[in-house]
Length: 427
Image 1 (cartoon, rainbow, N blue to C red):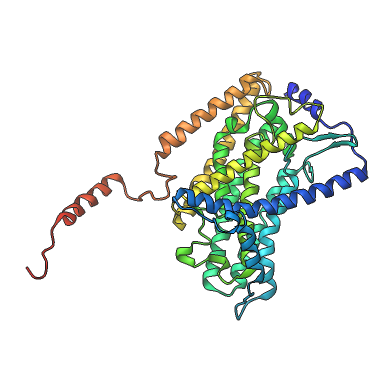
Image 2 (image 1 turned 135 degrees about the vertical axis):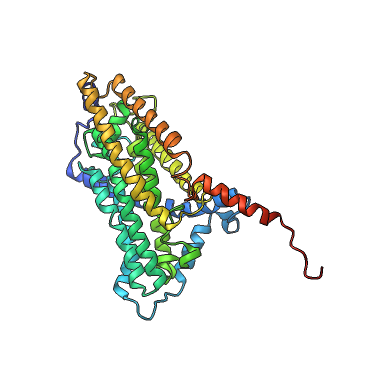
């Protein structure tokens, strides 16, 4: 740990910019991040349709500017469409709901570091909008507000299908939000800090958390799918059951804002997974990008690495959507409360006990034997969890409640019925 702290002191910015430079840099970063974020979310809708077409052997959007203008055409269409409202709608809450769904996803980006600091002639400028010392706690607090937009959308519409979608969403997001928060406690135990920049630096000089905390990453990944209402956790929408879920009564741009919020949440969750478990903007197998001098080329290259890691998880989101079926509602609740939460709590105890044991054995934090001990623990837990305990029964979306012996009996009874030839009525 002392070696890591000494290295962290090397990369700590020493020359602070003046207030005017800091204010100007913050405004520029806000403008650039908001623009890239909104344009990127619009292009992700095109990427989703192209990837689904690729999986299903179709062409996808290819008319407006060979498909590249499709997000612009969709935006113009939604802006000029007529706004419709139900008869008994609660209008203020009906209008507020799409805003409450989108704003939290955008605010969480304020504390996520997206590149290495830039050592300009006016001082070292952090590549994060708001380098809060409690960055991760800020994310947990703000991201949990998104459920209010969905619940208000379902209730204010005065539609039974929308209300059911809102209730499902609240139950699902509360269930998996607990597991998500618990899964990151081992990350905080290793980093000793809740600042996302410190978590990135700790992984840069030691080991990525996906190796040390594999089970925590798995829990966070599953909970992130549930929190963003993506397949196989799209219970709040469930087109085959609830028409369109909580946004059944919405139209025009308000309807689109829910989709924009979904993709924005997906990008934010992907950026968090890259930051907490894959080193954030850190370029692997080198410390060149983590030590002074903080040049512009380091900032650009680390920005590209962060974008690559984030988009990789976004691509995983899209692949999962078009390859896995939807869970039943009882499976969603059972997975969250009976499996994810106990697993997260047990994993916290296992990691904390291992850290205390390694400290008592004299292994320094950040040393090679310390990380080897954590990696061996995770390998053992992965084998126990996925190859011995689960064996394809707990995590598959369509497992049977019956024992194999009872299932074999039912198949034996139904087999003669399927092979019996039914005579025609004329015979």
